[in-house]
Length: 166
Image (cartoon, rainbow, N blue to C red; front, side):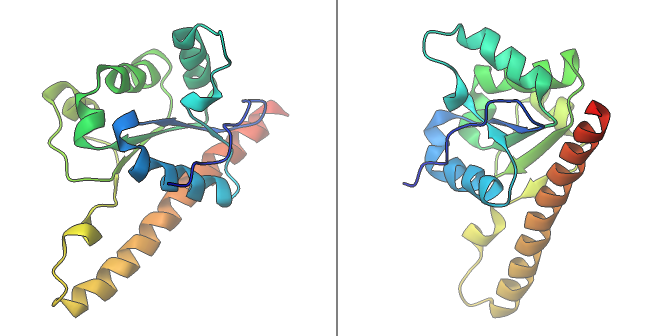
């Protein structure tokens, strides 16, 4: 499994990533994709050794331009992921983009928080039968649109933050 590049230091507008560590094999390629497309990404590997990790997480969430929540059964069951999402939404009104990597039934509280937000579904290609060639083309187009949505959403928010700093 290719690990993403190191987390950004937070000195420029960045994307904060929330995920369950059990899903690293699914999430790391997504983080790497964002990094490869020029988006600074802060993830928990950015916590300095010896730092109080909850303080570091809170600071990083408070300062992010966009909070990307990688939704999986593990992250939906993770109290830490739910705390990070809630802190970003309720305490600091950070923009949130849920990215569903695996079809997931959300707990009621999380479903309530995410139900009115546009999300990206990344799990459809894993479930399609090989015999449905027409769906493969549609799914590939859908995947490109999802990639574009994530990139444009992150780019727009990062640009808005940079303009606000001047």
